[in-house]
Image (cartoon, rainbow, N blue to C red):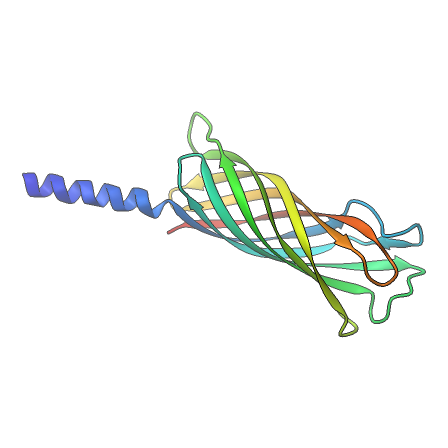
Length: 180
C-alpha cells in the first residue's frame, strides 16, 4: 500500500511539474499604430511566432518569444528595394496569468524587452534595435493542449532610410499551446 501511495505521489508531482513548461505557436497579423511620415504609410501584414514559457509560480512565469512579421510601405517612399520589410523580434517577457472559477479560461498580461531586426526584402539593408513590448491575451486550456489569442504592442526606434520615429507594431495572433 505504501509503494502505491509513493508511486501515485510521484506521478502527480511529475504531472504538476510538466505543466510548468509550455510551448506555443501562433499566427496572425501585424499593423502599425502610426505611419513613418505623411507620405509613407504602413500596410497591414502577417505575423507568426513561437514561444516557450516557464511558470515558476501559479500566476507568474517567464516567456521567450520569437516572432516574424512582414509589412509593406506605400506612398511616395524613397527606400530602395521592394518596400516590404521583415521584422524579426526576440523578446523575454514576464507573464502574469489569472484563471477563472472554472479553471479553463486564463486571461494574462505580459511585458518584456528584447530586440527587433528590420530587413528590407528587396535589398541587403537591415538594422537591429532594442525593443520592448506589452500585451494582453486569453488562453483556453484543455489538459495539456490549449488555445490562445493575444494582442501585443512591439515598440522600437525606426531610424533608417531618412526616418527617425518610435514605431509601434501591433501584433494580433492566435495559436496553440502544449504543456510539456
